[in-house]
Length: 504
Ligand SMILES: Cc1ncc(COP(=O)(O)O)c(C=O)c1O
Image (cartoon, rainbow, N blue to C red; front, side, top):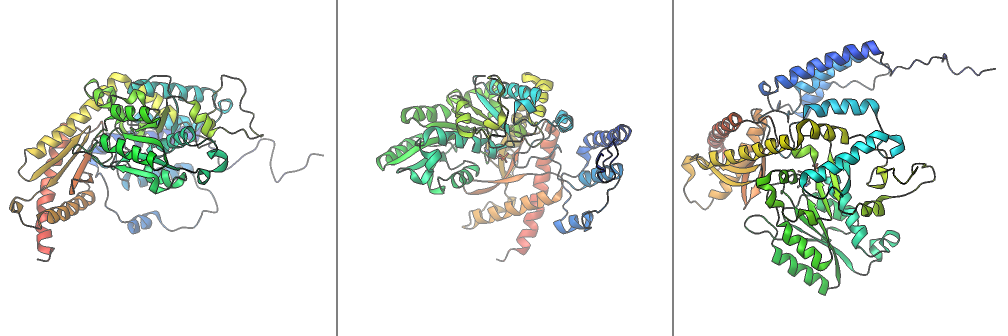
């Protein structure tokens, strides 16, 4: 006799399924609200200035629900919650950090990807998705102008893209017994080289992957914020004389603070001479290589053993999408491949299993949104958008240069740094620089709270600067001009209050 399991009937009913009719109804409602949101994004505040306490109050403090609720009601409330209490990086006046306005096709792609839900860890689990990811990786290599034979993998962002490459470099260049015996068994200290502008992923990588933070040789930069190549070579020679084992040099293709690009050609030559892995962190800047006028800045990129680039930065993908490209993808397989007995994934010689290319086993279909926007926009569309972002950044710089109360400090790629200098503060007092640093920090806080525009900060030549990074296809010339007016208005007000409150 058939065992009766609970009260299950032959046709199972579960509380998580949504009927076709209901899905259609709430899906259409959601899409309508999203369309209105995107259409009116410019009229909304960039951010709502609410404190975590206020937000917790809005959210309520109810315990985990015991019973379920209608998805229509949930989605409707949640849509309002997100639209009304978020920082809108899709706003035309959001120029903070390096987070782009998200391509609308990416939102639809994520819905589609989540619906099919392929596990892009193994090709057998994601037949077409794997092929789409392979094509995306190939197109990204073509996009930045390196050989389409580079292989790679989509990851969650810049940190992960750099980590993925870092570990491949370690496998390739560290003594061969390291996989079995670990770093501590190496008689030589493994060391790596990067400039002082390198993003903080490098500290995390050195600590997490066993080299230790003392393994990082921080190479000083020249006045243009580029790695000093002479110092790099001297440091490598010195390490070799002292029985250290140099393994890799990291060149930056657009530094996070000011957008400056290292001299990649010269770093590549040093790596060749000393047999070192050449990695380029192009998480932010490398997409600019698609622009003919910018391409020469990235001369030498074709020599890179690995490259990190982030579609969720300057290719306008919704978060999360990063990518590691490796000249010889076998290095990824040597680093990440393992074959547990419960895997029956290597069906034939032609399948590509992405669990062998990176840190994740189960993986989502991030490639879809990148693949779709590359096709929606095409190379020429990206050339236009990236060129315009750079031109708008240059406009911000010249507007600051021409304004008596602003100092234009730096401009590279689409990043401009500037600061507010009050008219009554031109005197050369001993405390001038420290006052300006404190004032500009206060201005930044006021701007970030104000909700009209969102900038972040950078320290350039010991100056505390306001920093605008334009990876935003919605920003226009009008926005830049308005932003300058806002900066000066907030600058004046903050200076006035600041003077009152600063003890003499
Ligand atoms: C040059 C560079 N590398 C790495 C990263 C880290 O990227 P993510 O925040 O996506 O991990 C950033 C972030 O701004 C960056 O600018």
